[in-house]
Length: 457
Image (cartoon, rainbow, N blue to C red; front, side, top):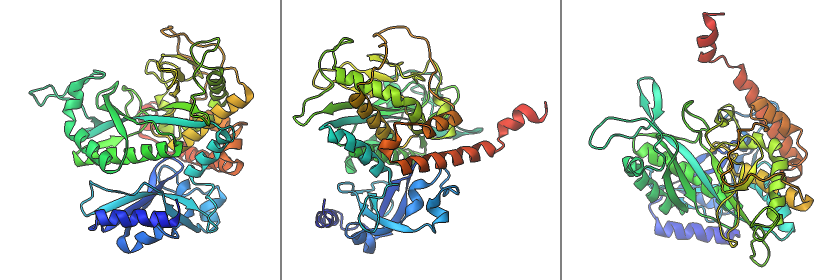
């Protein structure tokens, strides 16, 4: 979209919402956390025109919002500005704001309009380019799980459902229980309103595998960058709707030890230039193509070095545990939720693979970049995925992936596949930044240290 088209988008928006006073402009950092600023009306034209100055290191912040000390970008290079531009089509009202406010996503460039290589959206575009060179184009959607939480005397807890007709809460799984949805209906109504206002294609809502846990599915789109935009915007809307109802929402991978973790699942098909689904067909393993087998083989080959992307922080690794549909090995097969790569029940037209390894806390752009890298690697190298797990097969929990943070970072740093898709310098910077955050986290002395060791040791 040209600057003129962006300017028309802003003009049309302000004609529809003339009272707009502020605009939240933001882009996700390395961890997928939106970071940006609220600008006044006089500044709107810059973002939708020639661009606005933006702190270059914002996309490299750690989970605490701090700049890295061990990389050149940030403190060491004087933390320069770069250019930010509105993402076409992302301008929307902020229904939860007290004063009339808009929001838009940003994409980053150098001052010569070269895409900024540290912007996660551009990392994903680089990865997708390899499939595009083969005349292959992904269609995908994401599913995000989260908890609604509230305060209690000991800190916080999942928002437990109440027994109808009483104020008494009740713990327990109650998967797919409509009463659990009814119990948070005001939240769901606000979330639906927010998503409608912001063109977020939210679909089914589901009461998930733990009390206070829910899942929202997003519609399939033929642009993976847009699919990730939807995921980022949905997270913001979920948190806003929770806050409106006196609650908080968290996409932490494992906020509660005794309850299920939050996942980011992706459903991916692959079309050719004529719109044909190249995953459909027949092969020795079943009612899908050898192209799909090879794609799964590539995903398996890249999975160990991708875990640090799928699980970006210390809490992420607490999610990997048996019995909760969180695979820890590159397993695959049809219609089986214990597997990393599941082939859902589907027609030949929408044959797809569901990738089930990443946590909801991960940066969706980087997760999808890693997944697309695996798919391309598998197709071009005819990777064999190994033995398929049959539908309804009873399998034992296997742990072959590096599901401890230091091990995952080691596998990422030594990886041979992802650097060619992420770009060698981004790959290096990601490794250094995540290792620095890991070192900081593990240097802290937590209450658990005292509870286990202070008196007894």
